[in-house]
Image (cartoon, rainbow, N blue to C red):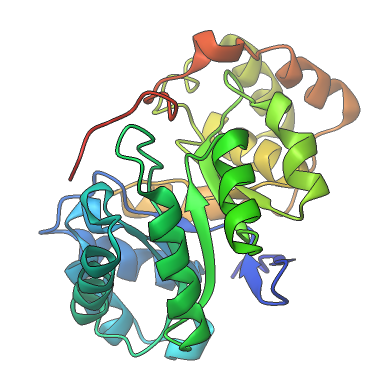
Amino acid sequence: MANIPLVKLNDDNSIPQLGLGVWQVDPRITARVVRDGIKAGYRLIDTAEGYDNEGGVGEAIRTGGVPRDQLFVTSKLRNGGHGRDAALKSFDETMRKLGLEQLDMFLIHWPVPSQGKYVEAWKTLVDLRQQGRVKSIGVSNFNQDHLERIIKETGVTPVVNQIELHPRFQQRDKRDFHREHGIKIESWSPLGSGRVLDDTTVAAVAKKHGKSVAQTIVRWHLQEGLIVIPKSTHQERIAENIDVFDFELDAEDMDKLLRLDKGAKGRVGSDPATASFLF
């Protein structure tokens, strides 16, 4: 079983550096997928209200054969729940579906700046942490101006910002700010929603190490100091994605992957500055 490193957060809690994401996993198979992940050695499980599969994650937590205190479970507040009362109601529903008394980490999924309520949502998460209902709180898809505002208005810095990040969209312009404030970056869509899997440069690096392209990309994230949550519904690929601790990319490999960055042109998801969808 993989010995996954732990990353220390700015609230003194620790999170596994490699976890299993369940975005776009069919709710009907989520429990099986997460159980496969737990069996393979994953201890960080990342879900969200907007994924509609928290119930399956909760079932897997109960039936996966691993004690609750060995798992790190993350969920995220839906975009339509930023008002305080709505956020509290949403959190209660998340906990009901997961079947948990305490959550390891809760994130604001998107800032939705046009709605103008992400600060209110953040204040609610701060209260939930103070009440002991969640251990760590963070955000997802926040730009620097969003982060600066919630920190200024509450004095509380998120432990994590979960953002789209992969070799074609490396978001290096955000790294210094996060480092200076002790905010860990967690990569969603770490394989570029599959679009990086056919890259010939990555394929050549993978062949050099006798690894798959996906394993090579996951390894890149780890060596970049990022937290990474690859997703798969296939048992063999779930196991493959965690089998990345027996090789290391050298300086030449890392330089080749650095050159794949396309900046904003490499983005596959929505832009946090303009995203306004509600769920």
